[in-house]
Amino acid sequence: MAVFLSFWSFLYTYRTSRWKFWLGFGIVLLSWIIAIVVDIIDSGHSPVTALLVLFVPLGVWIWSIIDRANTRL
Image (cartoon, rainbow, N blue to C red; front, side):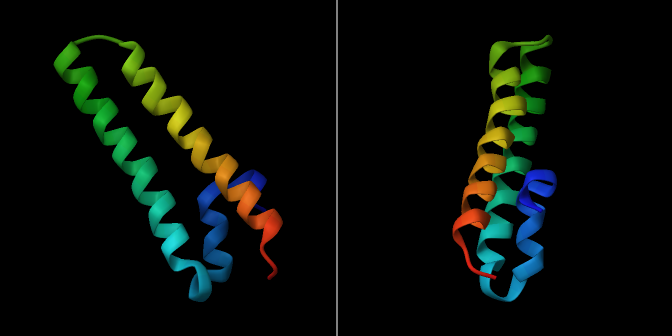
C-alpha cells in the first residue's frame, strides 16, 4: 500500500501511527510551500525548487515504504 500511497498509507493504522502521518504530511507540505516561495523570490526555476519538489517527497515515500515493510499490522 505504501508503494502507491506514500505517507497516506499511515491512515490505515492511524490510531497507532498518527504522528507518522502528520510528520510525512507536514514535511511534504512544508517543502512545497518553501519551493513556491523560493520560486516567487527567484522568479524562475531554480535548482532549490527542483530539489524540494522532487527529492523531499521522494524521501518521505521511501521512508513510508521501509516503515510499512518493517511494521506489523
